[in-house]
Length: 142
Image 1 (cartoon, rainbow, N blue to C red):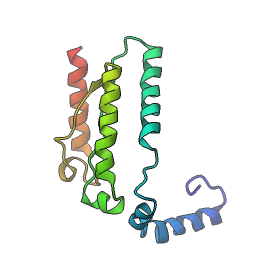
Image 2: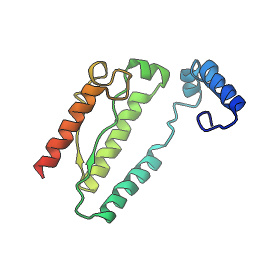
Image 3: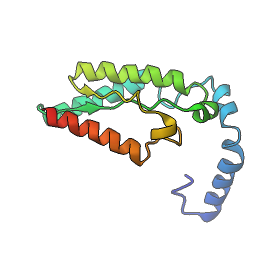
């Protein structure tokens, strides 16, 4: 709504509500919701499984490579309590589905937030380079 609104006053109101209220109270709101995630584990597993199934249907010889979710740093964990426990649970789902579809799961647990994804979740240039090289190495092994 905020980014797609063609009505400038709505964009202004929603932007301010987001910046002045939601951002400041995000951790409290997450706790209030019982640390619920956006997509529950069962739905995530179903959708992820469906995605790999669709890839295999399009090309039964496709080599599928999966990557884990990054571990949240302390800042992200403080803003979104429960992120790290969910990171473990959802990565186990990704590993399980990877085994089921004979996909290659490339672990990235040796990468750290302070060096490879300083915003707490998204890779910087160094992180992207390392991930790309690991994927390339894996492709070249085929």
